[in-house]
Image 1: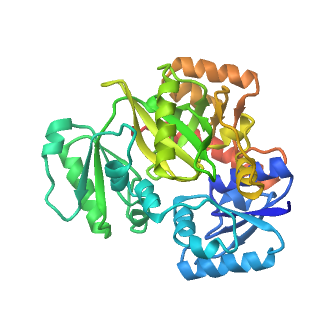
Image 2: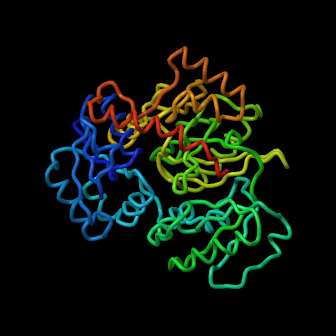
Amino acid sequence: MDFEILILGSDINAYYMARCYHEQYNKKAYLIGKAPMNFTNLSKILNIKMEPKLQEKETFKKVLKQFYLEHKDKKILLVGSNDTYVRLIIENQEYLSKYFVFHRYSEDLLNTLLVKEKFSLEFEGVDKPETYVYNISDKFDMNFIKKVGYPLILKPSDGIKYHDHEFSNQFKVYKIKNETELFDVIEKIKESGYDGNLIIQKFIKGDDSYLFDCICYVDRLGKVRLMTFATIGLQEHTPTGIGNATVVLNGYNRYNNTEEITKKLKSAIEKSGYKGFCEFDLKYDIDDNKFKVLEINPRQARCSYYLTFAGYNIVKYLVDDLILEKDLKYHFVDDMVCLSFVPKYVIKKYVKDKDMVNTILKLYNEDKVVDPLHYKKDNGIKRRLWLFVRSYNYRRKYKNLRW
């Protein structure tokens, strides 16, 4: 069956999805974004169009319908690369379903996953950090802090709304060390105009290597058909990047209870009614020996390409399920492979788990380490130069670790 893929967004997720498509089908993906980004703008494996008002509802619908009319002789797989486009797709699913193929589920479920207070209070079946939902216009209740102490994690409940109110030194997530810092941060957020709730949580002890990544694919019938469980060696440490993994080692879990936690996550996501790719962000809490789910991303995540590298092409899963309507079998991917956006030097110097470092260094010798941005079939001079500079800059970024 003849089909095309339309990717919404121009970020790193959009690029590797296009790479997955190109690797599997040797075709260029179509991409529509709001603004050019070097991840995709310097690529030769994409057909790119920019629309500055793409995130406005009526423009969004108009642009996507026009794309359909230009390709209506084929089925079109629609993929959002970030939360904003996932929300636009689900909010307009009745309209879009006349033209595109994509996973559908309720807007209420999307909000449960994307709005952090709803996730903390409503998503069932997993362990989560202790949480205080703070209404930014109310008096702060110090009882929670008296109970859990410092340091704390502070983050906006509604990330999309929060990033619509930019201010200097704006962080995606804050690690709060004392009362002065707590109220300084709250005041800055108030002054920006953000009026949503804030999530205050106990900080779970441990460096980046206590973080874990679980990717699930839930098919059109609501069953998990693909699953991984990986240790994160490093995350970004920039204000807007914190929480985004840069080093991920699949098949490695020093706590040896992978089957127990993945069974719990599989059950929870199936019971929720969600469909499509999703990513669980977790951290292991040594205080009670439990994996705590920090959030669930209702899409393929920034580091999900390691699934394709292990032999399970994520675009092929979407095509086989939604375009070809095949019956998929369950696979737990325990292949030991590493995804890294940073150079080997950074792994050696900054990953705290030395057993993990040694394992990754062995994988380099076995050609089992991948950077999704480096693709032999997409290596123009400008792109190679940009990737070299980007890799070099990671040495500087990790010198002063905030976390």
